Each structure stands twice: as structure tokens, then as C-alpha cells.
Length: 213
Image 1 (cartoon, helix red, strand yellow):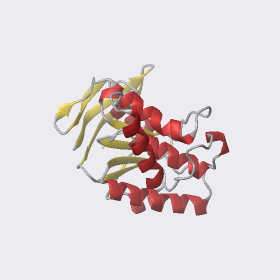
Image 2 (cartoon, helix red, strand yellow):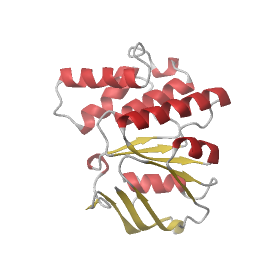
Image 3 (tube, helix red, strand yellow):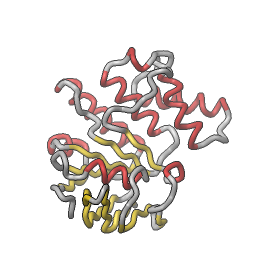
Image 4 (cartoon, helix red, strand yellow):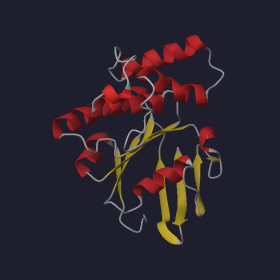
């Protein structure tokens, strides 16, 4: 279980998140819903270790990870802009996170894991494609596969459906929901859209600015 306890984040002297608490049971999906400027992305960054916590704590399954380095937290992150490597192929984008987090895996194990993930996100034949040749929805799928590659305890998704047309967005919401259910991945999704939250999440948490619950 993820346990975020009374975290505060102050950046440049400005409070961005104040006394925010959240618990996510293992194997469930929670949606964090709120307007722009409410601190949603900062909360994700604090959980995964990108942004330091000014006070409070973050723990997973009873282990305090507040000051644990990013690469040791076993947390996957899908960024709002996908944040993929345009100079690498789809295959190498997915394999990158795997090699970085679990460097002891042999070449055969890496290949098997990448192939498994390509199938999971419905992109079995896309391994040799360059990122620049993909649609927005395809890039989101690759970003999801890369985040899932090293078997994370927790998956964080920051507005994963932004800038997509409505038909594609609805299809991708359904597909990602199916993937999270099939993998039983504990997930926290940030969105400004209550409809997305209702479809994807077993629980919804609403926040406003400044971020308190």
C-alpha cells in the first residue's frame, strides 16, 4: 500500500502542496482530480522522488521511501508529454528503463520482456519504429510499456490522455484500464477530467489549490 502522510512541498519559497495525505491499497487505481495549479503533478513528482518533500513522508508497504533515490523506489511514471527518446526505436525506448533499473537481466530476458510489453499494449509490430513516426496515442502506449517494463510496485500517470482527440482518448482510456486490471498494477492517475477518473479509478480524490485533503 502507498501511504502519503501530510506531505508539504515548498518551491522557491512558495507552498505548492500543503499537508496532503493519501493511501492507495495494493492492486487498486486511484484518480487525483483537480484544476491546473492545484499541485497534482507536484504530488506525483514528490511520490516518485523527482521533487523533494519539505515535510511529511511517503512509504510503500510500510517502508519509508521519502529520501530513497528515484531508481530504487520501484515506481513507474508516465509523463504528460510521454517524455520518450525520439532518437531511439520503440523497442529501445521500452528496453531503456529495464536495463537502467534491472541491469543484471540478460539480453534474452530483456528481449522477452520487451516483446511481452509490446503485446500488452497492442504494438507487437512496432518495435523498429521511431518515436517521431508514431501518433500521439501510440506514443502514450509506448510510454506506458516503458513505465511497466521494470515491474514497478506503483505506476504514476500524469494527464496521460491530454492533447488527444475525443475518440482516441476514449479508446485509450478503456485500453489502459484493461491493462492496469490485467497486470493488477497499483496506480495513481492525475487528471482534470472527472469522467476519466470515473472510468479508470476505483477511488477518486479531489484537490484544489493549495493542495490539502
